[in-house]
Image (cartoon, rainbow, N blue to C red; front, top):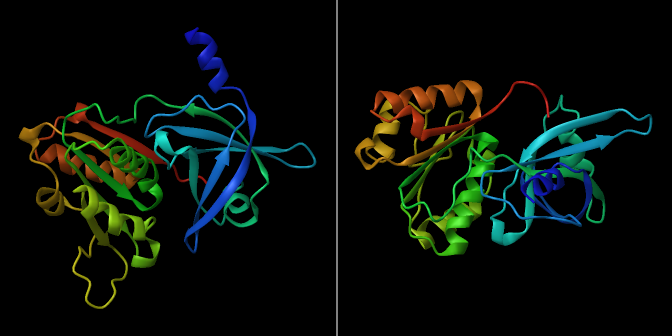
Length: 248
C-alpha cells in the first residue's frame, strides 16, 4: 500500500488553474486543482513540467504555499533567465493546465502536533514553504509558539505582506522583517542582512530547544545556520532548504 501511494505521488498529472493572485510585481500565487491529490504536509513541494511544441521539456520544483487544509497553491517568483517561472508568473491564466507531480519531501516539514517552539527564517521567496507552516498553525488552531524572521530587499518585495500584517496579531505569531536594500520613511523594522546580533534578539533561546526551518539562497541559509549554531543551537535541529543559483 505504501509503495502504491509513493508511486502515485510521483506520477505526472495535469492540474487546472482555478485562481491567480499577484503578490508582488515579480511574484504570484497560483491555485491549482489536480484530478488526484493525496494531500500534503507543510513544507513539501511539487515538480512542475512544461513541454514545448517541439517536445523540449523543462522541469522545476516549487514549494507548496497553502496549508494542507486549504487545497493546493504555489507561489512563483519570475526569474528573468528561468525556463519555467516566466511562463508561470506571466503567461498562465485560470483554466489553463499545469503538469505536476507530488507532493514530494519529508524532511523539511512541520505539523501542528509538534509542541516545540518554532523559529522560521526566510530570505526572499524562501518564505513560501514557511508560509504553509504558518497557515497550518492558524487553520488548526495550534498555539505552538512561533516566530518568523523574514529578509527582503524592499518593502515592495515582501511576499504575503498584507496577510502577514494580519496573521501575526491574530494568532500571536511573532513576525519580524528586515529590509536589506531600501526602507520606507518611518520604517521601524531591521535594515540590514541577518546577522548574529539580529538572531540573538529574535530567535528563541537555545535552551528552549526550538525546531528551526531556514529557507532561501544557499549563502543566506549557510549564514543563518552558522549564526544559530554560534548561539548554541543544536545543528541537528536546524532544517534547511536551499534555492540554487540556476534559473527556475
